[in-house]
Length: 366
Length: 258
Image 1 (spheres, helix red, strand yellow):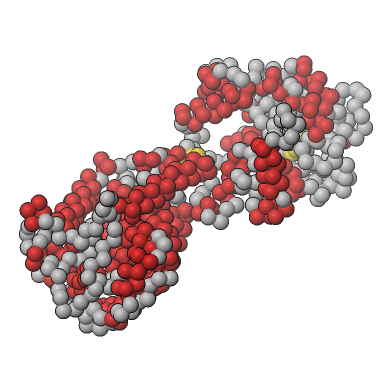
Image 2: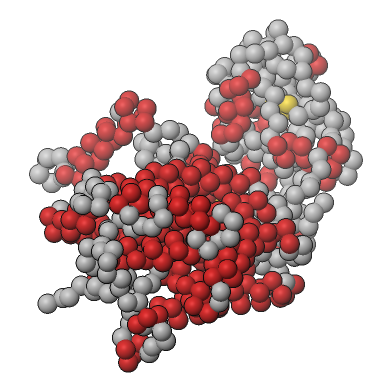
């Protein structure tokens, strides 16, 4: 089993503590096993086949969905034990009550209130049980829905059958780590046709599920990421509008093929190249640098860099190389923008002025 | 609820109307489950998932993202901003297309008229121009951050290649738009730029000829750059964008922290 990171544990402990109204530290300690733990079902010393488990009543819409999908069909036969009948609204009420007390202070196997309440809720003629799982044809009064709540069901393997008095099966139920054993023999006086719960088997979680992925700390895209993106979007829009109000786009004289301006400069993102062209033979500056290193070189990067690590300390060479490229490109571009004057010769911007028409036209506030 | 006068308060009436509007069959039919605008929306994990899954725009995103991915410092949202700038440029560009004719005789006058005769014409033109420069910058910075994070490493190699193509297309888009005002700046910057393309050994002159529709910048170059700028290049760019976004998701989302 993978070690669960501290941060995840703490967050789930906080959630649980909030739900139960307990101090976070206590719940966290329980989760880590430092304090008297809540016995999850799979931690029971030896699973007794006749032991019944009860689930915490808790709204769970996923189950609703699953129930809907199974509803109306004959109840499928369950190979493993995990079977569950949605509790109808009526059956749900008495069950909620013992939940808090049963959940937190370690429901010992024979705690009275839990047993009582579950007896009230689910009255069991034992005879109904064996036929129930495969009694597809006779399940008209009791829509038994097979539900496999992903992890919890696997861990808890709780077998639960409850009557659904309302019949529509749209109940709430969730398998949780909660045990409230009940006597095997159903108490006297249970109405006909009402089934009780029965544990068929207990399967250790490790036997039926393999955990491969590391637990990662994730947050919902909505609202967390979306909020960030919306903020970024507003910021860039604001920046752009302010820029557009303050700086005018340049519009020089109409194009004239006979009047070459001095100097003639490329757009700023090509000025680094133009700068190179003034030093080197065009074959080098115009071909080798931009096409080979610029396009093909960059595309080749992931296939050349075989270093699997992404940590900066492991890839000093790659980072140094890219930084040199960045610095070089920035230097050349800035040089081309500011320090090139008439005839594309070197000039000081503070002495001879800036020959860069892109940012020439600022709005004059008068 | 009535207030002291025994009349229905404004606030209640607004709420009533609101409920009626968003609760109507029409509104219900527009909004998919989980929409925050839906009547009776509640903040639950299920609805948070639905918000993303059931929206045509948002479902580019996964339902959940790694926690470090939402930190402001991690990426500054540079890739997303590049995309957003592209959308802004599309919108402002469509606006500009209404007032611009790509012919050597009228182009310059159109731009002049845009600044003086058209409502918000100057603002929109400025936004288009500075937005283009910002996009070049943000795409480049996006590439830099991807490099520094080593985010091009397996399984994301191919997406890096697509990204380099996108950078190249962005530069071409910006460059092709540079000529359109048809002023001295445009004409000679493009002349210098295309001269550089001519230095490519084997295919250089052919590329230059194809770009310029001739051996030097001329009136037909203007039309060529216009079609490239408003149709051909954006079309190609969108295809590569789709692949890029798709691969971001399929390659495991945003890369891990350092």
